[in-house]
Image (cartoon, rainbow over all chains, first blue to last red; front, side):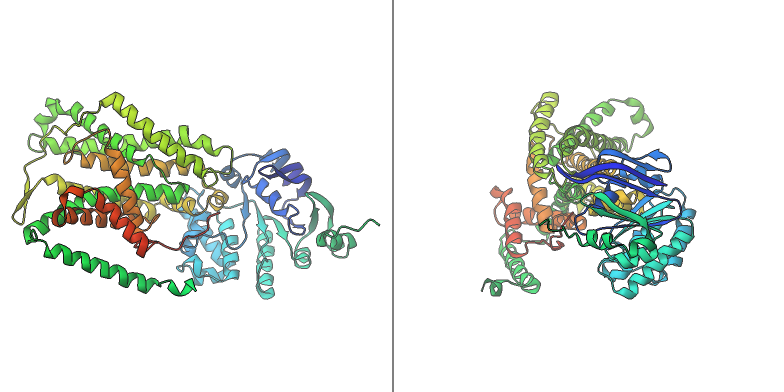
Length: 239
Length: 345
């Protein structure tokens, strides 16, 4: 479904990605793991069109989408969910969700999708008239994921859904991600929480210094020594 | 130790209230103080104030949407006034309109002029934004990063637009030629009816903008873009288009302000500069970047200015707006409705 080939990108003149390759199959959950500053989020930002891709291709559903404007990529069904803080704090929960469905044409579909999201996250329904600024961390993350689901995407990319949340809430959110996959969506999860992410995912990629270092079945990766090594970012001393 | 010198929100309000009371006391003591003069001060103050408010509204809208301060906004106001005037002159000789509406002839044309100024300045604003400001953002990451260059570009645009207007309409002050009805009697004093017209149309434009921003889908998108460009991109909003729309709306509102001022004062090439400065004062007084604050700030500056020139000294009329701005910045730096500065990505 999503195929990233020799992607080179970065911010300003700083190159972060040095030729990353990835594949995400339809209706699968793929985890993208790595330490701080290895380029996880950069891959997502390049795929969703927030930053330019300097070289390489990004294919979605068989079409090349690199360097398309971000709103067209959303229109094609590839949606990125940012980390929990990126909501519109001065708007109510419902307004935030309606913004998620901004590209929808019909009002009927908007309210259908709103129902669907409230079905995934009943907590949001309880707080639908509250300002988003008053939500707790876990509710903010639910709101972000819900907003991503509003536009009828084919695939969503989650940027650290477990960041700064209590383990119980992380479990809850991951269960919902699994439900989302069962309903037919493809999911790419960027995570720092390796164990949880590999429990959830079918396939995993570990990124280090802007290239994919290790990849494989998530069951296998869980016991792989090199994962631990590259995740901790430890450079072995060459004596 | 300086922490102890800081005054809280309550302290700010008390000191500001004291200033207001002192000022009112000063005005009441003036020999010119009577109910008639108070009425005319309020009418003129409100009508001038709504004009400052409309321009301040545009400045605040551009500031929240694009993260830059538009220093050429006064020129859109001036060109809007000329656009309205040109339309008035075009329609003024048309007999057939007069034959259809013999009673309300002037008013019908005037409404058309307001509409013309609104639409033409909107399109002109989009054109300016696309052609002159947008290329500056190509290099870096959009408007936030290119801020300083755009501010300087705004100054340059202001000079260029003044000179273009100078070439087209020459520097002679022009009155709106038509008769817009007799002065109206308000509680014993006669005032041009255009003052009331300014207040009514100005408030309707402000209310229309509020409705547009809060009740329509496009307004929702504009509020989203104003808060965060990145997140707006991710929900599928066409951010470059929306930035143009924000700029266009701000300029259209300034244009309608120019045509509103036209019949009461005169239309001059250099009218934009002083309006821009006073609109800044209004925006600061109301709280920079706050839209209802811009209107309230406009009213405050308008009434303060008119009252001061009536009761204190009429020869320093342009001074008072900035005096008020300085006092507000000293005592309540965030303005009436300002919020704490928030970090923007």
